[in-house]
Length: 369
Image (cartoon, rainbow, N blue to C red; front, side, top):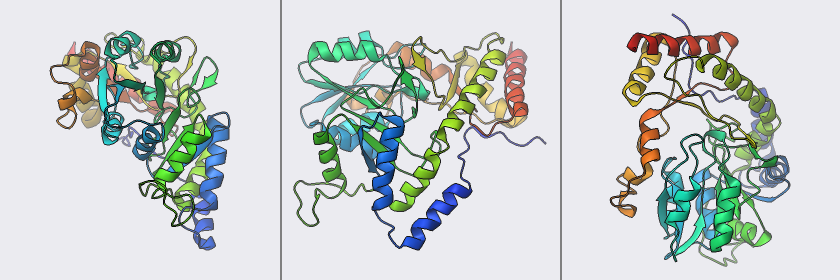
């Protein structure tokens, strides 16, 4: 039987092991010099030198970034519903209200007109997601923010190295959050990064991640323990030296999949808007809703190919978040949730793997025709 092709495959090698050993030998395991160096290197690599704050998860980064930017009870922040629940959760955790807007059908990112329609007198910000590694429509979203005096917060959890009109994501909003979860384009084992537009937001985030103190025992605000360890930072630093090559491989793999899958009736391959550089955290196709689950199951069971549905339940339909959006109908979001399937695109795929993926999809869909 052919080896199973995993939907995602984190790459952990000798560089990461050596980095962890270096920290363990040093005896400084909690937040320390590795974290500070990782913050500087990450900001220089991905965010044009923006001041960067490391935390223990992407969700913590999003939550603390919002708090550091002044978001709290009584405020509204417009978010997509077609994303992981952490986007809406992080708004709700500040005491603010997540307001869900619809998506563009090609990029799966926030639809500017739906955002405009969602603005109220309580709106303080917009938090779009660079979903799957494709930048949101920055120009249009920023124009709406400027018109209504709103902040933009970037959910860049899946978009390390993505660009819009040549400028890296993570440099547009008051803050941006990058996730370092194991399946992301690079990892620190677990963790997140907040890239900050100014020193005030960065200082607030540092206070909030460390029990509200910058000087030991001199607590200035009520904070959290959201610190990154030096062990995780060391893994992240090792990954940072390799991520550009991995991104290039993802893009090459996506081009091969585009060429093959684009010839199959009933398959819509990922769009890339003019001016966007897609980093393919996920390679997400669309197929008829009646075929999607069968395609996923048969690829897994008969062709030994993993895949994933991101995301099967829109946030505004989740039991945890639905009370924020009673009776809300987001047609493009709901349609996408029934049609999307993310296929393997990770850097470990071989030419043979890519051929198997294309042939597997073709076989399943032709059998169902």
